[in-house]
Length: 296
Image (tube, rainbow, N blue to C red):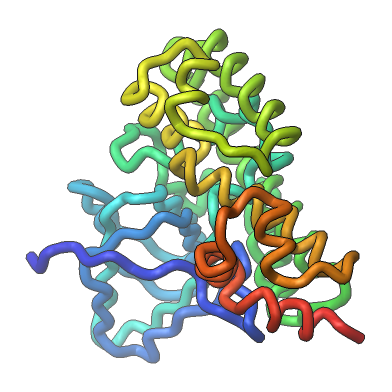
């Protein structure tokens, strides 16, 4: 078996990297192989026609029309279809951040964590007979159609439907006896500490902030804090801080006459070069291009 490879993040569309992407894969009746790979986003597959073998981790699954599959963030998986069998399936990819109600909320974490752990043993393959009388097929179809047609407000529609589909999944697990609670997830006291830190960052993001200072605020060691923060937020502390700063910078670029250097300093970056580098990372364009593209 080939060594699993890393698949890049979402494609860039019109200069923007959206947190979701969907399309229909069609084998055209040919043998089709997707080699073992992994990615940070979550992937959902809904089979419209035909059949295939999907390997999730070390588990081999035979799937066919009407089946629904959840692929975790960072989970190694592969797909093999058959020669002479026309196989089509809807692919929905989305960043885990979509599942949070706001950038700084961690109270949903105990529900979202199963999707971010590559080795979590819960049901990820749902057969047609157990989902045929549920809203799942409609939700998948609506996500695909909204993304394809791109009507006004489609981004909001896609996000809402993904959230509803996610809710259906965790309630399905709960109905079958799986409860991902505080006993298996992060302790509530730690979540409360982290929420306090995020509230602090919301007010002080433009100041000189170090990981060591934040670990001390949460009464954690540097190493424990770093691991815990990434596990909950799916980003390192520095990545999250830069994300908040870039978000605030976009507001300033659209509502003020500050130049690039002034914006960088106002949101907490010590120099414009690093600011531009980080801005491109999160937006796939420079601050100048962003401002020009936003002009009527």
